[in-house]
Amino acid sequence: MAKKRPAAKTAKPQLKDGEIPVVGAREPCPCGSGRRYKACHGAAASHAVTELVQRPFEGLPSECDWVALRELVPAATIPLTLKGGLPEGVPSVTLVTVLPMAWPALRREDGSVLLGLQNESSSGNLSRDLADTLERALVAEPGNPVAARRVPAEGPRLQDLLDPDGVFEPVVHSGFEFWIPDAETAQASSPEIAASLERANAAAIPTVKLTGVDAAYWCETPEKNHLRWVMPHPEEQLLDALARLTAAGGSSLGEGTKLVGSFRAHGLMVPVWDLPVGYTADQAEEPAARLAERLAKALTTDAPLTPEERRARGGLTNRQVTLS
Image 1 (cartoon, rainbow, N blue to C red):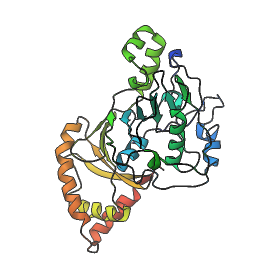
Image 2 (tube, rainbow, N blue to C red):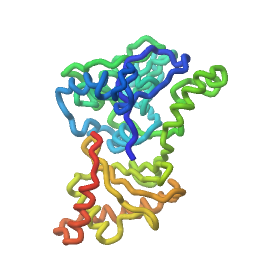
Image 3 (cartoon, rainbow, N blue to C red):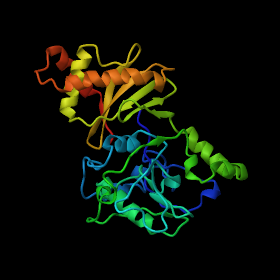
């Protein structure tokens, strides 16, 4: 259910050459060694971790969406608002799920900045890594990517650079055309670019953000569809509430759907529901809203779990997967 997360890698700043692979931590290393990236050139980044921040996005607007876009959503963009406004010569800063060649950031020819979210952390504090990349991107020469580096032990976090009152509204895309300005013209003029985008788009799981509840994302896979919902509640409290709903038969999203487990990512829980093939994001909207109401009520209950609820909780706990 979880998608592969691209790992940091330095590359030449040429979109036009047609080579736009997304290098995931579990994918073959581009060096040709035959080993996975995380066990080869990606190992240095993981060994460099000096601190581990469990909730790097805590305090940012829409923390749950940050987690979803980091771990679950293939292609999305979000305009960012900086404290004090944009520097001169930078018309916009946009957070993107991933960039070509897994670049940490890209300063476009027009001076705008794209900041990649799905890269490995060298410091163990993802927020500090991203802030360091953003600061370097703001002063980079237009038309160039920002290379990965080991982040200094002291430095700002995203929480120090972004406006806490800024609106964080993810736009989920079906593909990666946002990589290239005027992608339609570029693809028409370059078969290589068209082929590269086609390869990247083919690997993206179709994903839709629900509108009626926060941080819930529908996705389509060949065998079944899923709803993956990042929730801000403390894990033990949320597990108890979901167990109460499960024991009472109230944890599903309707006929043919089932709460099957959860991810644990960046300090938050991400319950996952299996959905039948053909069950669309639109169909999930109303059931998800009703479930949110039932869950809110269950979260306020502090009575001891019944034996049936304890069994349900044990089942949920056994089906947890930690992503980060």
